[in-house]
Length: 190
Image (cartoon, rainbow, N blue to C red; front, side, top):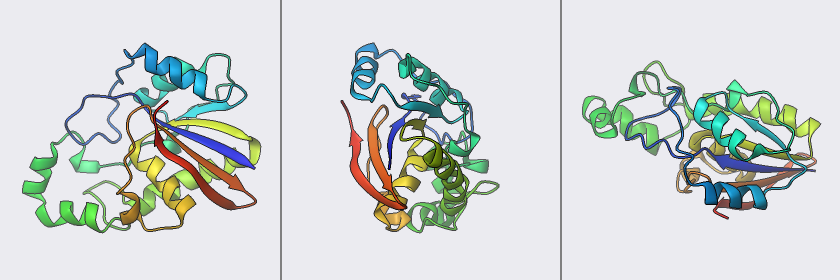
């Protein structure tokens, strides 16, 4: 059995699509980071995506926990040509595609980006590999990647998963036991 404590990185204050662009996280809320640190299991290993907003968030509370190498497979969705653009700009220039991207997630992708299914296929092997090696894992990642794992645990559609809120610094606790996943909590703030 493995417990996964998914943490969404600290806020970036970006108002645009932020996928693979490497923007920093605001880690000024030391009290919240302290509560996170106290809430999370001390014996857990810590892993993060390789994007700086996840790396620095993980480093802020890792403390004495064993820190694993950064995992590019846990990066946010690649928004391709949309990365760095404002939502309204994308909706204006790609109205049907941008609508389908959110309303029919799965195979729909941003131009030169990746789909929900592609991001999930990128993350699942990382999760499976770490799952086989560790019993308690704190993973600092991104909104989209966390939701792909919620989808896996709930065995539901990508569209249904988009109804879940994943706040910055929130904890989504998933448990795997003999290939069966369950959700302990989603979007918990300590």
